[in-house]
Image (cartoon, rainbow, N blue to C red; front, side, top):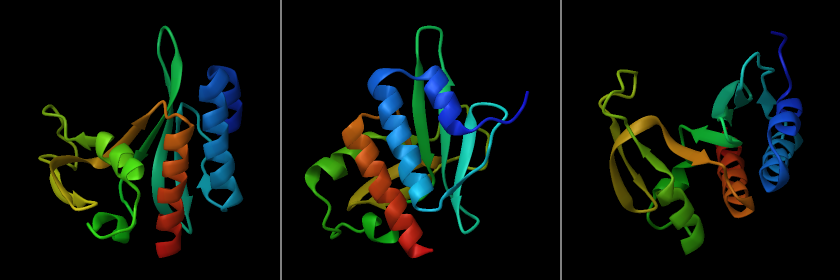
Length: 153
């Protein structure tokens, strides 16, 4: 199968708000010179100056498709309890923290611990933040995470 640009797959597989939110996210990445490898499946690695920022997946299900974003790191300041994030941003991040699956035998097993906005999380997956089918507000939050990460590089 030939490699495909993420925008082409988004336009083909997603509809309505899901398509708009995914395209908005990818447009933000491209505008900030974040590289998206062309893919021969439904996964793309996003990197800035050769440092991985996130993995994007267009998940294909029988009844729908969705955008999924997996992030391995937060900006260092976001992990501190005194970071000036609003309550909604904190709630979005906390609600999307992923524990290490009990059947996982990957490099994250048995899971790590991390303090995120002053709250302790244990047994976290290596890609500890998993965003599934984000709405516009969550896409905005993800772009702020990406902006924070590229500012640290």
